[in-house]
Length: 484
Image (cartoon, rainbow, N blue to C red; front, side):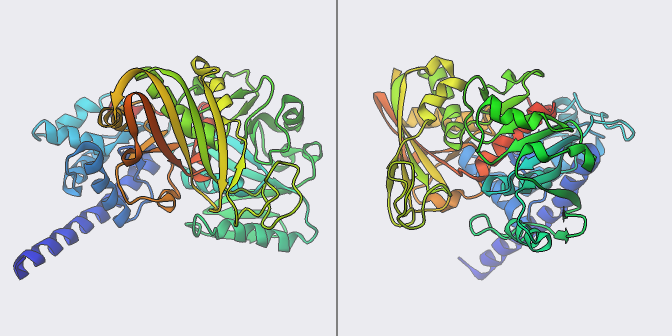
């Protein structure tokens, strides 16, 4: 390549960087002023860096087989700002691809057609609804990630307000608060928190990116009156896993200021186990206690749903290769569970999982069709589910992958199912992925009526994003998604 050609490539990159920089304030303005969440094939563009925006554009080529540049999306965003849009989730990437495929033309006219439902829908004095108070009961791995996601989403009409966290008393309040703040600020798996955290020991609060969060010290729900902190009709998100039935979780509802409870673990008894994207519509106003099921159930149910819809699942086995958890021991020691007493960082540990049986709670049509087991492996995060299935209809790997790819782009399960087609990806590449599960296309095996599908999932962050989606459903926070 000549020196001039090299210079042209570099100048093109710089030009793309400049356009991406100009996109950032447009995305922010749409979000904060119009309550419009701009996405790129399901990936949020809000608060993203220049490089992340450029990488998201490159990602489209793997999904759609077509190049998408910031030169394509910048005019879309610029014209969207001028159209006085009402609240919605708008996929800028899909709009840009549609516009390119129709041969270009008048951008404004195109947007007026595709976004006609929200054109001139912004009313500066109109309320988009009442903010929903949320309390995190417990502040461990999932609790802290939920805090990160909720703080990130605060504003822009999201309406979920993280008002408090509940932890057990530790004696020295000032020291305890500093430690809580430090654990939120620094994470060995997910990296540093993107923002600022201030501690007020006297008020017992953490101010996180402008969100004032009350820290409440209590050893049981019976000790808490949320109204004393001006918290009302709150959804209590129980991250402790101590209680999983209505009797135990019902303690939260006895607290003044609490209205509903959401469990971040599989529920027992008659509690509805919800996998967002699959059966979230089953949440009614009368459902005061709801479970977000498990991370594994969330990872496999959407994929099983689309496979059953297209091919029919006769039966199958789900093998989970799961990152170790806080429940296991660092070194060999007593544990009430079989094998879990052995050192987690030094062993693969064969254990049970209820995920396969739990599938039927979200997908009754698969009742009794699946078995399951789990192997805990020496990594701290990101797991894999191997779906070994017998199908009603024969297929091959290419057709199966093409179908799953399309489901990840254009179906109602876009937020739940991701898709990757690379022979080089490993578990750490999926840390921070917001989808419930990620299909690994290169690993797919299909021959006649037998298929094996491999699905990665961030069992911490991806699951936390699913929990927040359920929170939005419970709080009647819903947005129109365009283009249709």
